[in-house]
Image 1 (cartoon, rainbow, N blue to C red):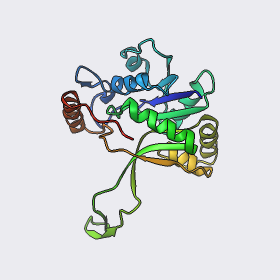
Image 2 (cartoon, rainbow, N blue to C red):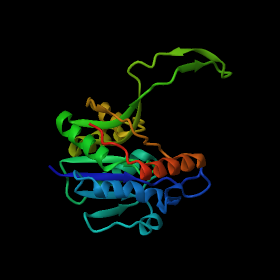
Image 3 (tube, rainbow, N blue to C red):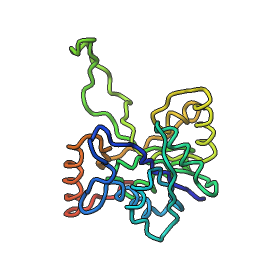
Image 4 (tube, one colour):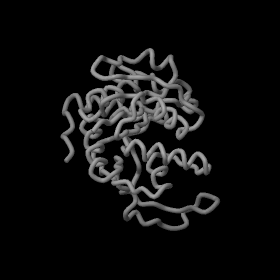
Length: 229
């Protein structure tokens, strides 16, 4: 059963002061790392990159599978909708990934998609392990929050294509704010299986994240990460 990928890379990078998606990491742009992982993932048949022409033109898209571009929008959920609409032939499944997560591995992508086939929807995530506190309006610690069954959401997130497309139509028409695809699916009553990730999958947000990711990639070259599962 076919699975397309939508890589969301439409952000302007204003918080970084430069285009974080084209920032160099071990000799290639941040976005190229994400794209390469999906090009190598066995479960992916085609890819849509939601980004501008300048970024897209600087990517090595290879020739192993179709890679298309569509423009993004002002909000993430609108960019995802653009990506879904740009897939030439409706696949059975679709995986959505944030292009600013360059540490994703092909094996992780395949694992999430296989789980989506079994469960209907699946997403990469990691358990909260730190102590959590609430604060008052002056930022003084006010109380603890139980971390039991709390997860930090990551990507990719994979779903039946028709279901996710319907979920976004509903959230858009009802003006329901969603920050990820799992939230959109939940809005129409679809639960998502969480796949625990034991590998770094950082989303680059501030300049120091680039230094951390660079260090992780260097370590991977010296000692490749073990496969999950």
